[in-house]
Length: 198
Image (cartoon, rainbow, N blue to C red; front, side, top):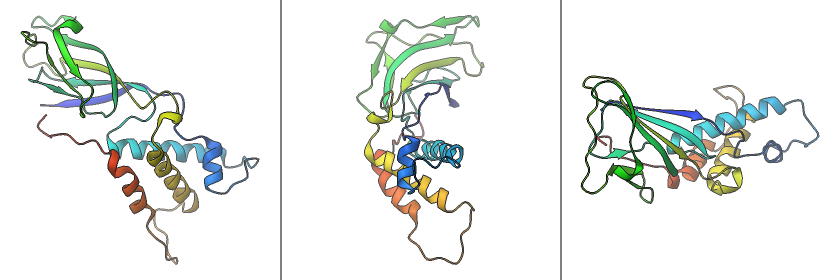
């Protein structure tokens, strides 16, 4: 089954403060020439960590779209906080929103799951229509970096430090430990895995 996942409301903050990043790369807080560049590195590092773990760090809104209802909906993003709605196009192509009383949600298990309530079945959707089912949900550890696990935040800092120091894709003439290995070790416990058939 084809499944698409898109963030529809992004967080307004990053999990790492610019000041913390500057301390990590040993820059004086008063030095501002590279502030914009450092902010872009934080954003890129956060995106790397989120993609590698299938998680949302700071609370955001997501939509998962499917061509039809599976037996059980498996959400492809970790640390889901709540389900906002389940919308679908009925057999006539009319937009409908499913009552929350008609389905059950398991947010304690990862990946989070949704299936019909006891005695209920999923409604029929318009045959052959793309993305006829949309689940809107919120995910994330919280509204600020305070709630993000220390290991994930440190992984972001390591990436920022590595990218700030080495601005080219290939570095020659030095011998150093590979920072990406350290990053992978930090994020490994947080990786959300799911069955590809779900």
